[in-house]
Amino acid sequence: MTVISSIKNLGPVMEAEFNAAGITTAEQLREIGADEGYAALLRNGYKPHFIGYYVLHMGLQGRPWNDCKGDEKKALRVRFDTIKAQNTPADATALDAFMNEIGLIERR
Image (tube, rainbow, N blue to C red; front, side, top):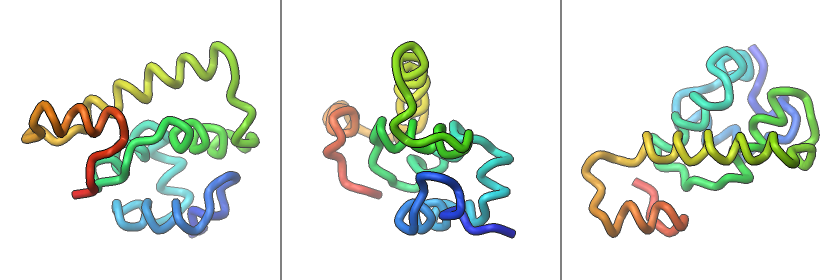
């Protein structure tokens, strides 16, 4: 089993976040993919951040984090927004949802 920080672009902080969300190996993360992996982070209280999402995608493809551009980046933004919306706690108030949207909500 390989540690998550062995994946390009992912360091010890992201490894700790994934471990806290129950994803403990690079193999697990590769198997579930970037979308489900990122959703697991959000469900565990990780603050949504688009750059973190596409860095994960690029890393799982073995690409540099800043390789995401143009139409690919636009398509990932749409997927990010969907994942973020689907993983907002159901009991969130309108204010919580707004604060989450702008990245200010506290971790749960």
